[in-house]
Length: 468
Image (cartoon, rainbow, N blue to C red; front, side, top):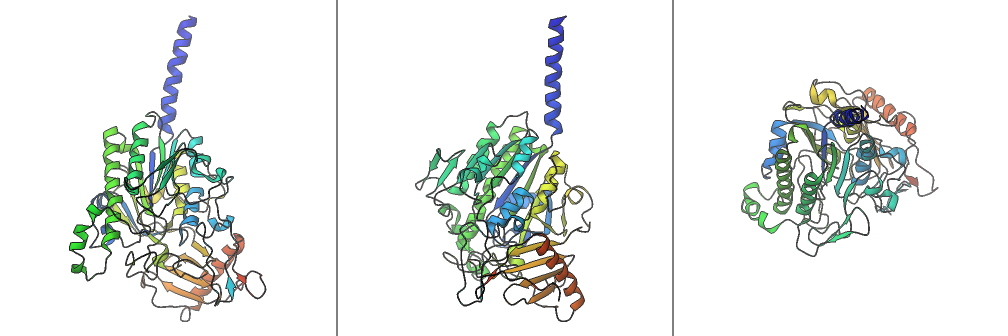
């Protein structure tokens, strides 16, 4: 009898474990590119680029036309995604190592925290709590102290780009610690290496547990260094487009697309493609001026580029793909990367965090794609970017967007539905709408205790006026 009892106990423990794994939600792969512009993919109207695997995801998944990063530069955007909390609230408002000033202007950049503090709760930690396996592969750029690393922030399998992160053929990658380093000296193309790590994780993962994989490609960030065997076809058609597109940049994007194709094949071969949600997006807008070489990309008709609060700096491609779960289509629902935390929380049963700033995209993914956004979208960049951006803040509500320039206190108002290029400032002709959005922005800056630029004359913060 005693033997039968323990046999039954063993049987039910195995059965319960399997149910727990199944109930904990789908596999999630979040693919983040670096400085990929809104207009850089064929799925978003680019006639020069070739990206068949991303075309497949867009055709068979949900394409967002009004998706945004939560910051015009990378580190705050990445921190916002990983915490679900706008990085303004913990003053991580510039890219790590960002320190540019403008001698000719009357303000200095705001004081800020150049790292994601170890005590911040990340999505990886919440996924682990629910029994998920977690992996982070690629660019981190959120701090280098031990408690700020991906392996200290909830990732079981961590492959973090370290030394020479801008060099695609001479770089180092830390493997789960600072003690283990893969050092390349011209052999493995960095984008391909990150894909190889991803395939390794998918091959070795425990089959009975779901996983959360954060694949953070460094491409197509400058330096613009492609694989040589991918450039020739783009050089051949360069003149057909009047020199508008960068052949080397296009080849870099194709390497990312190739990697996604291999990942899709691996998912299918392992038999968990049907239970895997794939999200593809970018950390901020593309680079539309010369930076460490020729101009990478053309973002027309969007205004400006990375480092600016205009659409070219913050609007990004976003594709969600989940076979037999997400119906193919297109949505204009406005969203930022802050929305992924509550979305993943709902899908995987994560412990909800009161501090999360976004809203779940589940209704959009699985049903009502014309739903109205509950809350405005906010941006705060109190710095001078490497791409000539100035300290500014912005808010979008519905089709309307307002920008506040900190030094001059000037505002601009645009109707994005009618003027995606932000060419017609309507602040003077529609003062009521300008006042409405300004009030929202001022209230959010105050509520979030935003760090503000400093007056050079006094060393004190510039405080926006309470109302127009």
